[in-house]
Image (tube, rainbow over all chains, first blue to last red):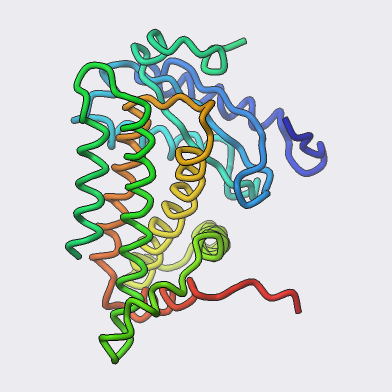
Length: 107
Length: 168
């Protein structure tokens, strides 16, 4: 995992913003995790992994719920001020139950 | 735009190909195909401006994925700053056009990243939810493009996709 210079990004604010978003978006959102890494363009970026309920992942609701989640998270972490590129990946609760990847669980 | 639309439809078909247990191959190809749908849409629309129809496909081949991603990333960041300025920009047609461009540029950046993972990272496990979400975003970008394709600002954005970063 790349080291993000403390002066460049206030990680406490990001953590607090993500927690606020997670609380506000329940029960559609089960948990929000994130990590810093370089994207394919070599820029340090913020990668979100978001587990959502099976109801929220239903095809009829997916577009609306994921857009709402992205908007809320970006707002809460004040993404415009951070100047970091953000990426979002989603997984439903039942998909994670089947795939069982620790990376998608809260450590 | 028959070809980009067909690619997008194909991406959705691949994502839903196995109703119960989607194969990673289907999901990964779906992500990659959705990215190419957007790439092709922008390329075809760019080339449409070239008067000599026989040379349009050659012009479209001048587009480079990484260059486009850089341009889109910069555009997306610039527009984010513009939208969040204080006082905010006036709510008018021009702002609506810029919001659509931001949607397209940001979707390209996102999909370029996801496509690289889908094509080259064998360790990544994909779920259908994630893949359908990616396809949805490309579909929204298509709708944004349709809404603004005749706008000067949109056409100017297209031309910039050819611009390589200069070191001087």
